[in-house]
Length: 129
Image (cartoon, rainbow, N blue to C red):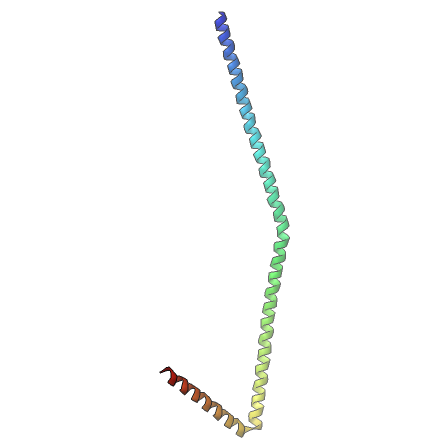
């Protein structure tokens, strides 16, 4: 083997070694990048879980408050309905008592109210024409 062949073989071996080193370095860079990405994802996942742990009590509290407001609203409506029913019953009893105690005045009052309503209806139907 000549000197030139030895030099070419040595250069080829050196180039092969450099190429292998570059390939190994590239593989290591890819593996490092994968590990870094996996660590970043793990940290991001832990961050999301941490936020979720912090928000769960807040969400539960808001849900409890909404439920309490709904219950209070339902109770308020029930109380208002009951109060209105009692007032209507009281007015009915007072009217019945008045009719029993003052039958003549009751008839006159009913007739006057009917006449006033009939007049108002008659006047409103005329103004529409």
